[in-house]
Length: 151
View 1: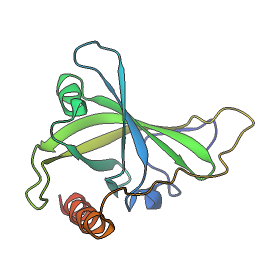
View 2: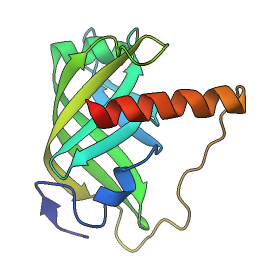
View 3: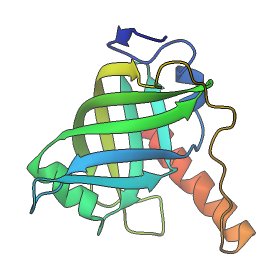
View 4: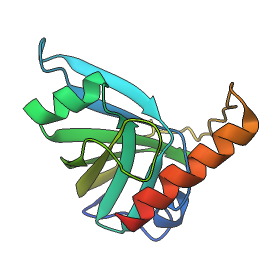
């Protein structure tokens, strides 16, 4: 995908967003108008044109998206780094099927770019461990991902 700009997820990227995955999301700070970056893992692409994610409803990112809906999702995958930009809509500030106070956000994709610098490739993708009770984490992850899929 190098040097190409797409208007939707590609056939290669779409399956990668069918499960929990580490990404960063950049928003415009509602107070400073500067950049604000947050890392999340509850993300799901129901279609090639749409991405949904869940965030704590007290997150600064929520206030940022209310003031400016344009966001960028950074995804490291397939040996590269991708910038997925679009307009975010807050579907609900409290997902009912989840015990935490999480907001559901839906993004209409406007542009997908391969932004990896020339002559390089990612040799490993980001990995993370949940630092709280593994059983509780797995249960919560299932609840959130199910809610994102059903929304």
